Length: 287
Image (cartoon, rainbow, N blue to C red):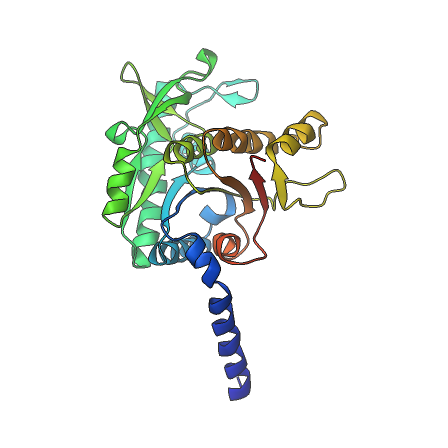
C-alpha cells in the first residue's frame, strides 16, 4: 500500500473516532443487554469480532450484559445422544433427559466459549445462568411443554456486583423453578426480562435478519410500539419476527428505553448501532 493511501486510511480512522464522541458520551455508564444468537455465534471469526466489540464497549464506559442462545448446538447434542423429542404446536417438549442436555450445552459448551472469547480480547467475562444467585425464577410456560419456563421474577443484584467489579456477565437462558426445577427459557425472552429488570438503556437482539420489514420489503429503521402492534395485526410482521417484536414490546413496557433488532451477520453491528449516526437494524421505542 502506498504511503499516501495509508495516510488516507489513518485520517479516516481518526475522523470516525472524532465523530463517535457524542455517542461515547451518550452511552457512558449505560447498561446495554445483548442477546447473542444466529451467525454471530457460528464462526470463530464472528465470535472474535463480537468479543472485541464488547470489550471496547466496556472500555468506553458501557456496562454490557450478554444473554445467549444455543438451539443448533442443543439439537446437535440431542442427535448424538439419540434422545428423541416430542413437539407440541411446533415447540419441543423439554423432559428431564432433554433438560440435562440443554443445561450441559448452554451452561457448558456455549457459555464458556463466549466467556473465553471475551477474555481473550482483554475483558473479564463471568459465565453464569439464570439459576445462579436467584437471577431468574420461572413458572412453567405451558405444562404440555414440560420444563420450558417463563421468567416471573428477576433479581439483578449479582449483575450489579459484576458491574462494580468491571466484569461482563455472560448468561445462559436457564431459570430455577419454585420447587427446585431447572427450566429452559427462550433466549430472547430471558434477555428481555433481564433488560427490563435492569432498566437497560438498550436491548440489542442480534439475529440473522436485518430488521423489521414493511409491506414493500424495506427495512424500517425506527418504529414505535403502536406501529409494531399495527403491523402484526395486518400480518406484515409474521413468523419468526413475532416473538422478537413481542420481546421488544415487553421490554419497553418494563422500562427499557429502546430495543434494536440487528443483523448479527454484519461486522461490528453492535458498534455501528451504538456509536454511529447510521445505526443498524430496526429500533423500537415506546412513543
